[in-house]
Amino acid sequence: MLDKLKELEDEARGKIEEANSLDELKEVKVLYLGKKGRLTALLRSLGSAPPEDRPVIGKKANALRQELEQAIERKEKSMHDEQKKGKWEQERIDVTLPGRPASPGQKHPLTMINDEIKEIFLGLGFQVAHGPDIESEYYNFEALNIPADHPARDMQDSFYITPQFLLRTHTSPVQIRAMEKRAPKLPVRVIAPGKVYRRDDDATHSPMFHQVEGLAVDRDITFADLKGTLLLFAREMFGADQKIRLRPSFFPFTEPSAEVDISCIMCGGEGCRVCSETGWLEILGAGMVHPRVLQIAGYNPREVTGFAFGMGVERIAMLKYGIGDLRLFFSNDLRFLKQFS
Image (spheres, rainbow, N blue to C red):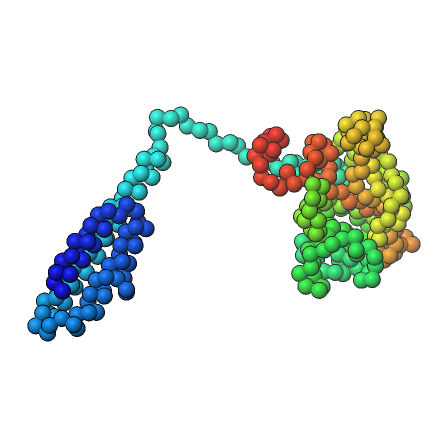
């Protein structure tokens, strides 16, 4: 058995020296020192040795185990040191190279458009109002004249958190909150910028996007006031020669309602591929505040009127900058973002 122990020692030391990787070294350790390893098996067979030889064999076997463990540790440390040295050689810094200046930060194009929209309406006497991203069904639907059985709810695939709360599908709830806070005081002139959420995702839609909605409530407000406000906005945003067109539409919270188009910024209204040869591009929806919405918010619809509008910030940015895919705004591609510096 002593001969077998000597043979096993020579074999194990040779395997340790031949190991060229940490994985190979681990295999050697398992082969000789593992639970089913060769040295472990030899120790377990010690009972078959003559009684007078057992103490000597056991002592030498345990000593060999310690020596092999130390040899493996030394080899492992040597391999780790070599890896660190190689990595350092690859990653070391050449201090003689000239410095690389840090690129200055800049505003995201959506932030730029959002700020521009706010500046235009602040100049018209509107105030900025904010509301929660997580809304109740009451503010997101019911207070906007969209009861539970109303088919208009099917137009907005929502992200529900509980049966009563959801991620808001528009910033219109902020308008209700603003009226409730001020009622029955007049006038009310607010814009509500913020994120909104719908289950939609393609080149022109995103599950999360940005809206700016506006509301004006006072005595004797007419549809002409709405048209004049939106015409001024279009000219401030897209150029002094812009024209707008209002087409009849439907929104539960406004009556009458309209889709608002601007003359095509690519062809000036002559007709092109971008505007499908119509000369017009849709930018937002608007209308006169529904009497029921005024009443819910605490105003007497016999005494006051109002108008409301809503636009997608991404839509405005795509038109102004000529961007064909909305997903570029959220891809964090610096090649795209640096164009707006």
